[in-house]
Image (cartoon, rainbow, N blue to C red; front, side):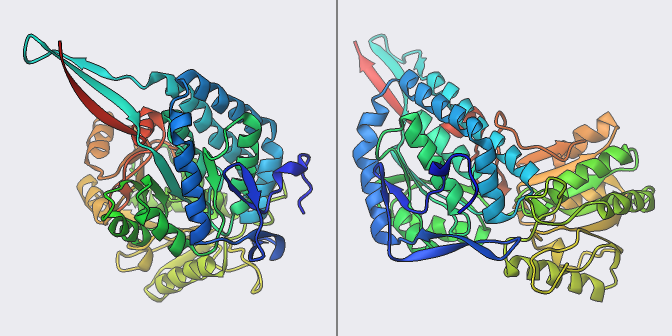
Length: 482
């Protein structure tokens, strides 16, 4: 049991149709920093996923028929409750996935911001009138909620990943079924508790907990009552969900893998570029989909940049996230840590050199030293694979055209970053990078007000901004004869 001020936030049962449902089958939730069990959470599969879908379907008409203002007011109450309980929610995040507490507090604020934004956007679902093609015709375009929506979310942002999906859905008038990661279900259940306190009616927001992600995901894809599925995760799984949804022609939002380039041109402010890279690479121990994966530094400043980055990274403190001074928490599990080790071993065998870090802290723990390596070549694994850990490889390049080609030489297209003071170069590079998001002279691009999402194998659709609301709306054209 966590030491929370609001004990009601510690939930271990699924939340379906306004009821907390327990199970004799449970999945343990493990703190990756201590390897200690936090809780046993109800482990359900297809049957209860269907119950959640049924509850959402039965609640759909009542929810969509509420006025936009009524939905807005409920969502705003939910937003306020998240902020009032920020410390407890942050403690839950840190306990179940290891994120440093300072970052966890930031995630709660960020996650809550989606609820506020879409609460306000609920009142701005505007249709259109179109000049008629005949004297007796009036042409109207309506925007209406798509219906029951479902989500499958990962463990790395256990609150924000859900709120940026459920908030626009509820604002649009849709009902919702969430399946959180089995590694981090406590955050989602705490969200449901606060949603109930805010007045979200029974059946409108359901949380199905279960370790069998494949079976629950298949039910979401095949069930005809689910009209929209939003998924954040790997490209492999996203492609599978696309195929499984084909028969029901379901509307999809897919935020998939990334392989973000981070480019530092020779005219950049090196200090600011180093600071930006610390955020873009080492936030959440490198476990974000928009993390810088390939760091390209122009040859004229390569050595100077490497030295400044090495000093900065060597000063990062690794440890349990509950410590206020911790910068780098644990990796989520042994598989995640092993992937970092495999990529580093591959790079060293091909000539890379470690500038700082390069080792796990202890053989029985999930901490890996934040690492900088140089002398990188394009045949190394992290050139083509997402790392998802605190490993920063520095590539050297000569010309603008060369680095743009290298940056775009990937199937992925989620996030990208570059640093330059040259205005003409800024325009050229930002236009030519084949990514859904580009950070110019910044390593922090996520914002409630802006569309988050990628192109190519990094997915479909956008989250956040007014575009995020459109994902949960259908257009209806009406031709009226008068």
